Length: 464
Image 1 (cartoon, rainbow, N blue to C red):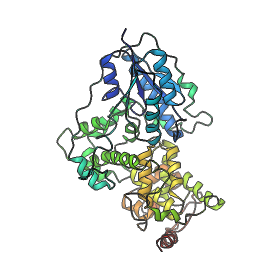
Image 2 (cartoon, helix red, strand yellow):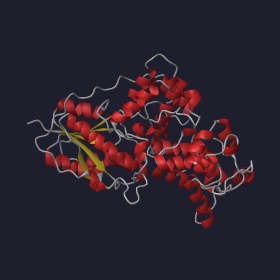
Image 3 (cartoon, rainbow, N blue to C red):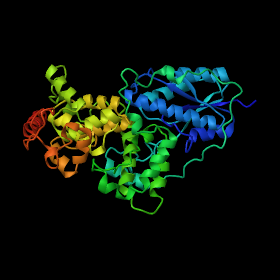
Image 4 (spheres, rainbow, N blue to C red):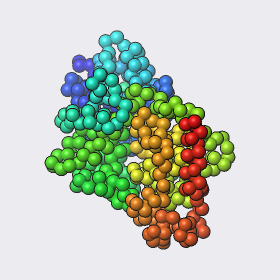
């Protein structure tokens, strides 16, 4: 009897271009396993919106495996302990998995190697990024810290290799180990069901991911012109599919670039995912620790204050009095996603208009985004706050009202802020200034000029 191999699924929830699965299936029986791990040291518990996505993605993955004669084993607990137990009870000879770079997954991989029974090996494969993080280095062999030279160096290795073929069949083991029932994990909300509208916007799983890729291909050439326009469908909306590994960046690169068109700007967005992983590989605590020491003494407003918490709540709920910010925050709550340009505006508003520590916003996005990714989320927030290894200068303060007009956000605002649905441009961008603010829409939480001066004063305090 050929001993089975375990395929440890984490954020590679697909059958195609899945190097770990392909290698295991080529050698004999396979036990596909997903472990809901909230306990590995330094583990950051997955946010609520991401758990909704995970539930549906696992349903899709299990269905795809069953079409191949297999199934998905579900367990909950410390990954290293459970995988070692499954290997021991089934006589598995190997565990195959895609490499991950979040600090808790690196801990889990290291611990697993020490806990496996004698003769059982852990085989890690690449596949969730265009290039393995850490493999693109400077001339002196050190990792890049700044994005632009990183992109130039990465591009020298592009295009990536062809996607790995999907196994035609997946042999089952003689005996399946015990499995949890997905519904028992209670990943989806019930009372109240705040995610009730998510399904109107998303189809988690590999099939849904590929449909989104197909839908984006014809828009890819206009990506640079339309990606910053919230009122238009100009973005790819692939971020949650890429985060959960329902489709590989290699597959996306080849599909989008396959017609000889210039899609460089979109390729650079794919490369940003690689860059973010390189950052957290160098700085594992990047989600909670700023890179620039001068900001350790920055005079953020005291989050313990009820007034500050009230401002934060108004930001979370989309009641700041700045229509573009409020539209974005309400879109986030309703769909688990926010337009990329509006994310920058909303993040900048929290950090610079409200002087609230970027880490509070990062944690809120972590809990409410279906595409919440440790590397990308931390890198983007630190870029906005000016605290990152590669970041915008703090003194560059976005003006949300002019940004709203510049990028034609009128229809976007009318959709997500119904109190303003009857206002035409230009009034909808700043109804308070035009004297037409509806009574049921809040006044500005702070004036732009006052907020700007307060932020600059705070920065001068640190600089001096």
